[in-house]
Image (cartoon, rainbow, N blue to C red; front, side, top):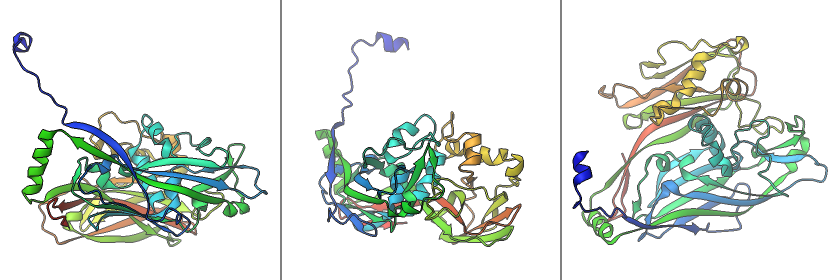
Length: 415
């Protein structure tokens, strides 16, 4: 420290490597095909630019038209903008990097675990709201709405890979949902109207969708360095955690069930699973798909081949308010997944029980030295009572993925 005080002849370092970051808007091929079941393709062909997809976002504008018989308020549910789509894909140089099935459910499960009380306000543009009773009260004004969905809240690639892309064509493919009933609900006196048969006649008309991408400009010294990277003709490695949603549409009405979720290769090992149950919520006018049901679940085990997680049983009993281990697993997610020390979960214990009792299983610590060609993921469910009719189970798998891309010839490979 003394040398620091006395070194009066020391120079300084000009650390302004990035000289400018501007957001550029990219339009779909067809600006009119934004209705239900339409496929919205937005391409970015500016290969000479340095792009930063981790900070890009989708901008949405639209209107809501309701029948004259409905005098009550229409609101988006929590994370409602994501429920306007049935599938999303992100491509680099024509190669699919990640596909998000059922973006509404996927990002809701992930959002409840990843967001906290401090940063939830920054997600209000995507129709997220921490006030579960007055959810999105002012998001729609005089039948008009607009919002933004950050790509890092849709794709694991954009959340984990925080570097620029060099010499890359990129494409975003958004498939509109067949109906918009799952994105909105009818409210009266700040309560969801349980019997709202006319809600299906409410029309959501998206008038504009843009993909806004940061274009990065760098200093001359950095241009030379990046040009050397391109001329080396060596592939660049991108490691990230991909998100994959698996759905069991109708659970058998039994007290126990074994669900064979999927088989993957050893390089796509699941590290976390987030599981939620919903009873009679899909296409329901009175129940929001942004909430989940506990279905009196007693215990849950996840099997990766012969390994079992967690080691000990959860032993929940929601009827007796016994859910401490389940809530702790939920509350510890950010500490394990992001490495955060001081964590305030988005849902307190009461909100967790009454609105979204989801199950988080941490499988991040595994013996990667064990030789295996495939990984079988299986879930054993046990409940105090038989699962109700029309109960769906959702399992969001967060697994490792590695891709390489060559900025010289554009070749993309998935390892």
